[in-house]
Amino acid sequence: MTLSTLQDKSVLVLGLGASGLAMARWCARQGAQVTVADTRAAPPQLVTLQSELPGVRFVSAELNAALVSESGAELILKSPGLAPAQLALLTAAAKMGTVPMGGELSLFAQALEDLRQSQAYQPRVLAVTGTNGKTTVT
Image (cartoon, rainbow, N blue to C red; front, side):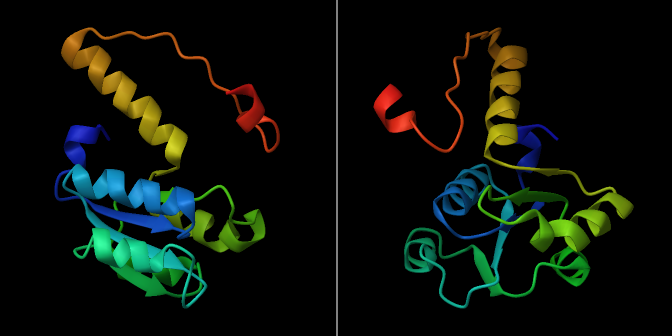
């Protein structure tokens, strides 16, 4: 799925911390119909989500197979802070229904690919990853 094809697609974002909010913003700005799900009733970025993106739907729910079918998701984006055990049933359901899954990096990679195809833009990317040290490196 290219970013240009996010227009009017149903996107399910899992987790509403900093990464979840960033993915919801990006997808909404690309014209997607976004639902954000979190197991917490009042996740840290809920007020910001509701004020910045009033068209984005928020649900407080267990992350399970029912969430995928109820949301009608055509793309699932997961926050890196979610425990793999939390996602096991949901991941299995997504695979059975062939719903693609990704995260912030997959959105970034797709944006670069779209730019390469549409504008012959081919930047070199240096990525600093990991849990510790990014602030002091950058």
